[in-house]
Each structure stands twice: as structure tokens, then as C-alpha cells.
Amino acid sequence: MYQEMQIRNYSPRSIENYISQVASVSGHFGKSPEKISISELKEYLFHKVETKNLSASSVNQTISAFKILFTDVLGRE
Image (cartoon, rainbow, N blue to C red; front, side, top):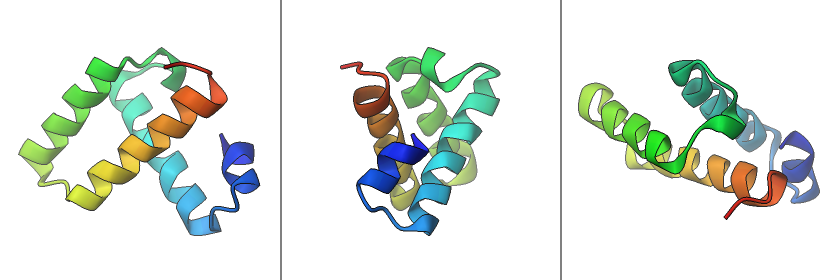
């Protein structure tokens, strides 16, 4: 994932944020990011919005991070 974002010329801060978002979701479920389903990701985001008032920007960052992981790194739809 890191390499994919470097190829796309993402800023170091964006790369750090995206990887942090993926790590947070992975830690929440206690499993590797590639084993997280879209429904689990939605569940996580809903939970964070409801309990921690997660901002729209943070939600979008998390979705974008998983889009890169799922589509460009893992080749998933």
C-alpha cells in the first residue's frame, strides 16, 4: 500500500494518515486488513460516527485508504 501511494505521489502526511486509518480498522477487528469485508468497514465507520463523532473528512480518508488497498493493492472489486 505504501508503495502504491508513493507511485501516485501522495504526500508523506497523506500516506501516514491512510496507513494509520487502515491500521485502526484492522486493530478494531483484530485481523489483517485484507480480511476485512466492506460490511465490516461500514460497521466500523458507523460505530465511530455514532460514538466518537468521527468527522466526514476522517470517514472519507478511511474509505479512500481502503479503496487503494482493496482495488489497487489486492485487486478486489
